[in-house]
Image (cartoon, rainbow, N blue to C red; front, top):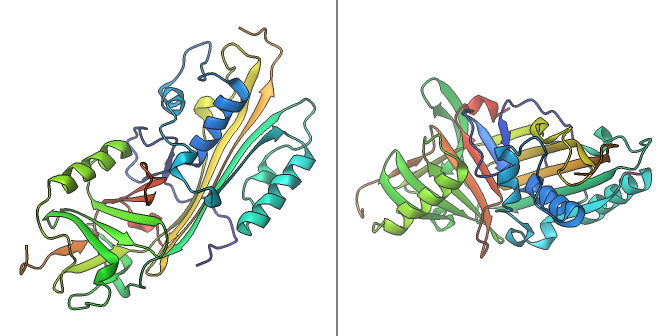
Length: 328
């Protein structure tokens, strides 16, 4: 799988800074890249939790908790850099991305690399590209929600060959279920049929509560079916809530804070590319059951989580409500 080299960020999906973030947006996404940048800003630049003199908003309080860290990822899937903003630094980052991921950046050109005064850059890229255990069937166009259609992949009833690639976490009804898709490497894909509008961390915890209570059949049976819509989008977020604010106890100001996400999931697997960056300036201010067929059809609002094997926390979460935002 190869994500398109063209960068078009206009999906209309809300990008959240943390899994704890709350929003009224129906379609929303979180990936841990901006948290990695924030962690390095806290730990390597400020050396304290981030506070603002005029009050610290909830988004900053949540980011300060560092509930997602590089310990939740394998070293080979991310790159980070903190340094002075210079043209040399830009070339250093670009060279590292090419060497490690054979990738180019979607955001480096948005940074002013020849500033009049000293500035810092805190940057990260998270890159994932993995295949499912077996290629799923292409199921064609099918209904999604009340008035939409989507391209689907999955398993039709009676296809036994693909069943080993699916693990049932729980099945309480055809509107309340979750599955895990097996991949060829250390990544796991969780899909939870759930219309809750609560934060991702709550939904993640709720999914595991139901999984632990479930005493039914966790094997994908011959007469079960699986339908999953293709998901593809690109989104960019400027975190304006934290910009142009002086950091308490310092003369540092967050000049720019941004994140991009490109995601593609189809019958073959998943590809994810996400970048985040913060530009830091200084200011002159003084420092202060068995036979019953089950239908695992993700044909209405649902959530996707991505997590590495043996890691505690997911590195990606997506809520899908309006499927038209996620398909070409």
